[in-house]
Length: 282
Length: 241
Image (cartoon, rainbow over the protein chains, first blue to last red):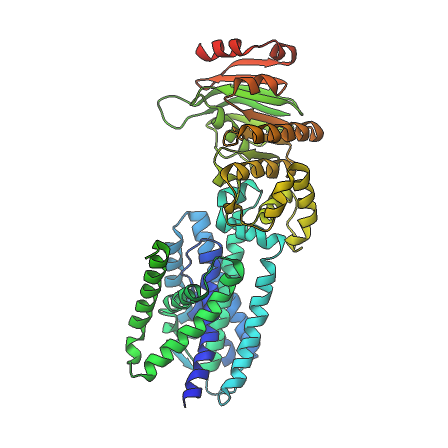
């Protein structure tokens, strides 16, 4: 029983890790506070569910979900870059608009996919973990390698010092648009995997996803730090795994599922408090 | 050739910082710019670099009107603000690669592959910096970072090099080394250079042309033999007027 709970936590943690990466890329690498995951996640789920309903291959459905979600990131970045709208506000505006698009795509607030051909075999959690692990490696490894290339270096420079980057002939807008596409692409993959795992899609499934991913990212950064690129790239994965285990543990100890969002907020605040104390040397 | 035609710039309605500046700098010229604080020297350089949009006039480089376009591909600048010149959280190698490959199309080649070329430049400049190649620039002193910023600007092979009091944070010895290296590179690469300084002896010692600005206008523009004939006293008189 306990092992099942642990393995389910690992599986959910791996999926959340993708959203945590999606948050980390703009937030930590591009210095762009992107909240569009709140809209990209349900949109990805809606696209994936709709594709599965018309018998499209589950992997292709996830890819379509990722592309749709990636375009949400492109929209957010363009609104910020062209209309000079604050990054947070741009994300909120896009997420709000995308909610209607998600509803249009599925035609109703939720869809059950019990008859559809899905990627995961529900009975075998370990097998599901292996599949999600493979997807994460296939997605994150190119990202890790990219950041070690000349192009990746320019990408990092845009986030660290935009004025310096501009003087080095780096067109920051291209990297911001590309970065937000990739970040939300990851969110779309996470949404597609979730739909395949749950055999169910709900347009409200993105509510609170940013805060969950933020909690995971902050836990990861608190545990291993983010003072170099390797640690920064490991933090979302480790944080998401730990965060889901904490959630599993408190549920096991009797906390009501309705209190989980409060707990998430409390975890984020606790980590911020811990970090600021560490920083202040208290 | 760098041409400034009727360039004006103001930050408020009180008084313009640059008033109808007309200037032609020939390729390979090393031009020293003098003037009191607030006379418009840095604004002129920033306008040339494209960091300030000018209110009026045109900026032409090699016959191309770049007034409203980016000049980053032809102009490299080193300012007094070290945070603008480097990225402290990146390593020395990473900073140098960004500058070294500035005008080239970025590739998917691993940036560590440029290490040997970067080390060669570093050795030519100062052997002691080699040990910091994989260290974040933040651990270096402000002077060392300023020194590297100048090196970075030079290795990026710009057509026009803008130096805004780039040696002001350095000790006398390092100043000499850096100026020697800068001079060597300017001559070798035939760089068109504009250098702001407050040191009158440096103004006389370096460069083949000297400009003095006052209240946004050029009040002194001398070259070659005329410049060589100037003394510190002459410059002090010009400053006072």
